[in-house]
Structures are given as C-alpha cells and as structure tokens.
Amino acid sequence: MKTLITYQSKTGFTKKYAEWISSELNAELKEIKDINDFDINDYDLIIHGGWIMGGMINGFNKIKKLKPKRLIVFAVGCTPKEKVNISQIVNVNNLGDIPFFYYQGGMNPKKMGFIGRTIVKMVTKEKPIFKDTTNKENIKGLVIMAKKIQ
Ligand SMILES: Cc1cc2nc3c(=O)[nH]c(=O)nc-3n(C[C@H](O)[C@H](O)[C@H](O)COP(=O)(O)O)c2cc1C
Image (cartoon, rainbow, N blue to C red; front, top):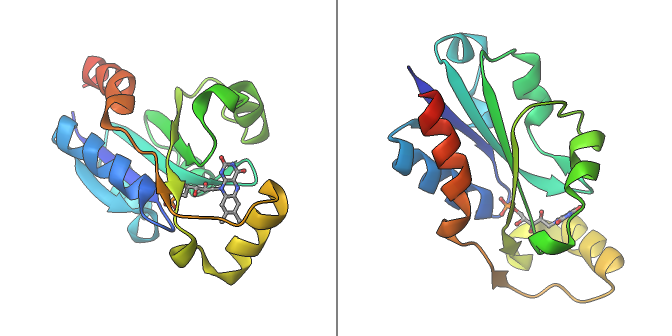
C-alpha cells in the first residue's frame, strides 16, 4: 500500500499540515505542481490538501482529473472550523462522497501578495495581520482514517 500526500499552499499553512500528515503516515509528500499521471497511478491512496480561496480548494480539480484509486481531501482556510459551512464546501467543490476534513490555517499578509491582501481586506473588512492557528491535533481523524485504509 503506497500513499502520497499532495498539497497546494501559498503562504505555508497547508504545507505544514501536509508535512505533519506525511510524517505521521510515513508517506511521501509532493507539491501539486510536481504531480503527473504517472505519479498518481503509482499510489493506492492520495491525500490532497489545498488552501481555500473563495470557498474553492486549490489543486483539488487537478488531482480529481488524474483519477486516483483512493482519495482523501483536506482544506485549509483562515476561518475557525465552527464557523465553516462544511456541506457548502463539499457542494461547491463537487467532493461527492470523497472523505473531507477542514483545518484552520492562518493568515500571512507578507506572503499573500497585494491582490490577496486586498481581497481578504474587502471580504473581512479588516486589515489582515499575521496569525498562525494551525494545530497538529487537528490531523488525528484523517490519520486514523488513512491508517485503516493502509
Ligand atoms: C484571495 C484569498 C481568498 C481567501 N478565501 C478564503 C475563504 O474563502 N475561506 C477561508 O477560510 N479562508 C480564505 N482565505 C484565507 C486562506 O485560505 C488562509 O490564509 C490559509 O491558511 C492559506 O493557506 P496556505 O498558507 O497554505 O496558503 C483566503 C485568502 C486569500 C488570499
């Protein structure tokens, strides 16, 4: 059973979760831009993590198109989990019955770029400031699920 963790991260929070998951499962880790058809066919389980932009999970469509044998998805946004409408994310991204986990990441204005900062400022009506709300505890459920498959 071979597992690959793929991720798309702009400011580093999704990468951090992907690295934690990869080390817990002793599985390979690749950034989405380095993935191709050949890679996907080589693995029995793909776990993809993408940062959320306007409700969309980055990189998910690319992974879905490559038709992995089994897929688990996690998304990372700045919104606290209790305020997130999970079924809305599932619907908007067409996740269907793919297992899905949401984690709170953080905010890193310096790495968001001018356009990113402007959009976040418009949506939240606040000036974005740095905060890291990642927590390794969050990955427990996904790790248990992946270990059952492995
Ligand atoms: C343009 C833009 C749109 C965003 N949209 C959302 C969103 O819809 N929901 C959310 O929770 N966070 C949103 N965020 C916040 C990021 O998802 C959050 O900062 C995340 O932790 C970034 O992950 P990364 O460090 O892996 O890039 C948005 C950020 C930017 C720059």
